[in-house]
Length: 254
Ligand code: OAD
Image (cartoon, rainbow, N blue to C red; front, side, top):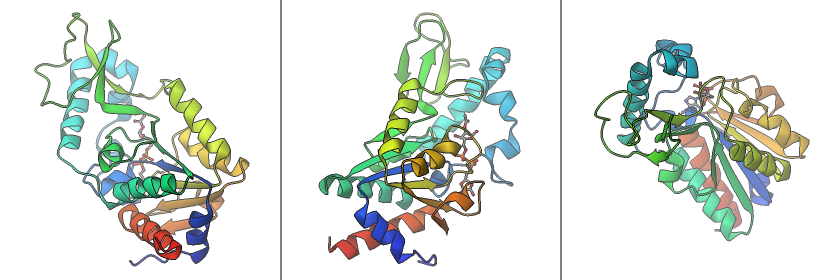
């Protein structure tokens, strides 16, 4: 482990009563899923989000937008959770055993957290596995191969759109409610693998601090919230999180 973890952070994790973790695309990067804003290979470095991730883009060219999202869905099907996802699932299980609360709020749509075993997960931006008919509103999870045609057809004759939040759309009300409730009660907050430039997630560290929580950021580089965090750990989520969870257990004699 090349990244020093402050002992006070390990102690804070051992003592925490209610942990909230916010994740972004960075935690799935080590599984081989492209992030959005990494300069060279981020999705938004190669594609214009306004051409793909907005209701207007879908209205303009539903075939192109749904084909692009289906290609991302099929890429997600080929990858596996990495040690960062696994560490958060392990932490949730340990905290549950210790009768302490844990909530994972993710901006990711790949469901790799759930695949790793995380249970208390709030999907702020929906899921690329879920597709919704724009006519009858039916939502279904599609785990199979590529759709036969684009835009994919619903049985009712309508067309399917990906069940992800596009720019300009509201976040799922239940996801917001659950996030606000967890943030208001937490005493330790982690921001992992997010550039902290998309709201409301970018504001969550403020909500956690307002609740009196200590805050931690795990990222490869500084972000607009790094200066707010009690601890800024610069390193790969897939290395930092497993080490931190192991240190917690070791010091607890687990
Ligand atoms: P970004 O691509 O904006 O940011 C990814 C962050 O993860 C960056 O700060 C990277 O430095 C960091 N990172 C990359 N690899 C990492 C690793 N191995 N370990 C730790 N950190 C790493 O992705 P998000 O912040 O998730 O929304 O983007 C937020 C939202 O903007 C997404 O949910 C998506 C996007 O547009 C919509 O599409 C609505």
